[in-house]
Image 1 (cartoon, rainbow, N blue to C red):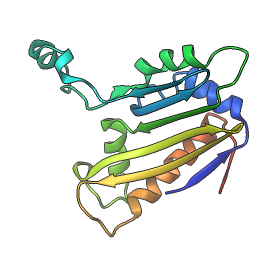
Image 2: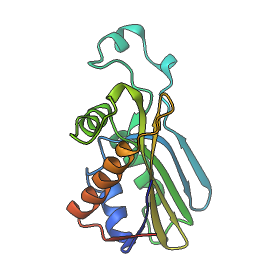
Image 3: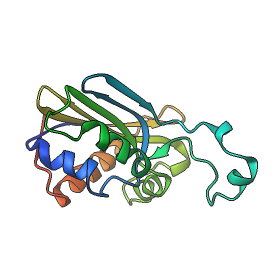
Image 4: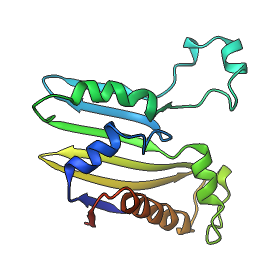
Length: 167
C-alpha cells in the first residue's frame, strides 16, 4: 500500500472526470460534497436485470459498475465555478487488469486469489491523495502483488502526466 499526494489537482480531476483514462475501473463507491453530499453505491443491483439480460452479458453480471458509466454523473455534480468541498471515489481494477497484474513474472499469486486491487482517490481541502490497496480471498504473507499494483499505479500516473510524491 502506498499513499500518493498529487501535485496538480486539475490534472487528476481532468483524467478522472473528462478523459477515459479510468473508464475500465470498477466503482465501489463515490461520495461528492458540494451544496449537498451525494453518495453513489457502485454495487450492481442484480434485481434490476432480467435473467435473459444477465445470460447475454459476455462475462456475467459484475459486482460493481464501470467508472465510464458513473463518470458523467460525478462530472455533472462537480462541474461549475466552485470546487467541491470533498470528493472521494473507490476504484477497483477490472478482471482483465487483475489478471494482468497476476501474470507478471514476480507475482506468485493467481488471479483467482485476488479479491480486489483498489485505488482510493480523495479530494479534500484543495489536495488530492491516492491510496492503493489489495485484498485477497485468503490470508497471504506474500506482498509482491501489493508491490506490483503500487508500481502499476505509479506508472499509470506518470504515463498520464499526473505528478505525485509519496507520503
